[in-house]
Image 1 (tube, helix red, strand yellow):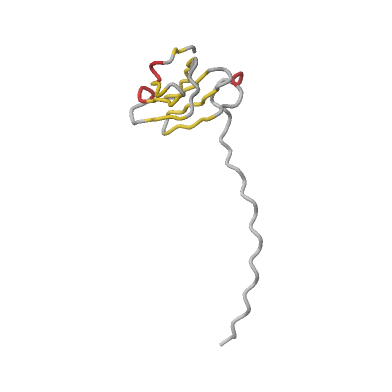
Image 2: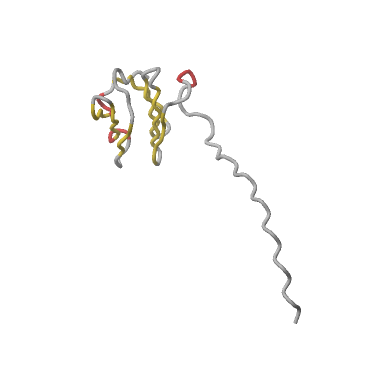
Length: 102
């Protein structure tokens, strides 16, 4: 039987490469969103400077005018874009309460 050999020191780990999220799905003229997210085939991105909210559902992008709402959070239930609601300084605003602009 051969004697055990000493263990080799661990090699340093390679740095992790960030995941590529792919190209932005919202119109480029809006720039970078303050916040974005989604679930399943529903995505949203908030652009406070432009007062716009972009929503992608089933591959179609729709823009909404957020008006005076400063959106700070999202509430999403199962059932597509109709179930989206956002928190603003004025309380909860549902997606169907915002004016569609594109």
